[in-house]
Image (cartoon, rainbow, N blue to C red; front, side):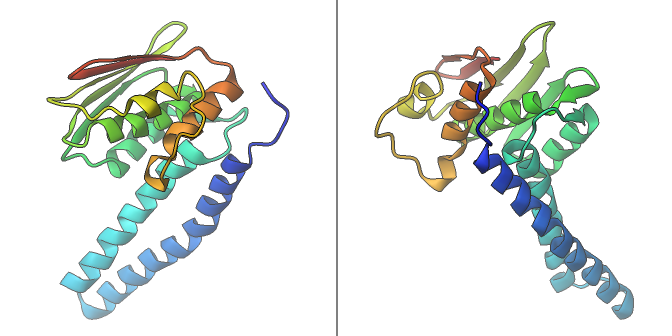
Length: 197
């Protein structure tokens, strides 16, 4: 545990907070334009779909990358966020838990889901299960793409490990695990992954 502020989380929260209003305003403007024209058009539909996708990603990023200390979040909000933000055509996620959740747990779990999404580029199924004292996340896919260095870094620091922006969730999860002091384990197979928290 550390008393240092989590600057990455604070930046994530700030970005999400500052973008919610302008993206919402774009959505409202699209609705007004559709009303003035007497209905939608292919162009307005495209803009509306993009605004909806951006809002869904912002809600996901706020929970996964934002500040979480001492806050709570409803299971229904998490499930709705997952439904809207993850590519349903490739991934199906089931979430079984109490109705009221510690936001710190949700943050860790969403970062874990991003790591699993990276390992499942061809799709698959993920189940998030809350037990009496620990969480279990099970993933199954016809085939997986495992980077041993990235996955190994979650349990032990990997000096010199290069990470691209598309894979930033791995070091963020590793840092969040160290910050929280939570026990974490990963079992990686050919077609299945089990993560315990």
